[in-house]
Image (cartoon, rainbow, N blue to C red; front, top):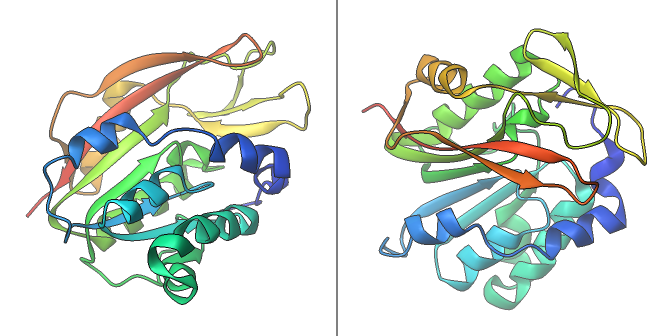
Length: 224
């Protein structure tokens, strides 16, 4: 990604993400899926979902731009896959460059809280284009994306260019996000051949600082 944010390598941030449970939408979506389903956990963070997928026997791969997150996720997979296979399947990389994976590779891509980390609209579209490339025709994309109107910290996010917002957490420094509404998210996904399988909905999560994130929850299918 443009201008990598060292925030993600902080030990306390890694531990915070490691403590989170597996995503309930993912668990529900895969409850009846064959274990041969090939899944990419894009922006895997500290491996909460990657570990669940490995433990359940899915054909799982993961990618993150943070070395600390990749190392932590690999360690979580060793008991299930062994050290060599955990290292091979969890890779260091950017969401807008998935050249380490072949075209039409995955049945499902998890993109839970990752696309909004793009620093520009162009980077956002490059990332989704790469996701669409590695998804097989008919494959699905499970998305969680921050929505416009979010106020995670006391300072109101400022729109610095269309769809790109900047805000400063209490610990600093300022951070940028792409924040979208539901029609825009669906329309932009459609540009890449990804169409809603279910209505995109919004949910709100309160932050530890007393603010809130509006989250868009979506499921897309790649055109065949």
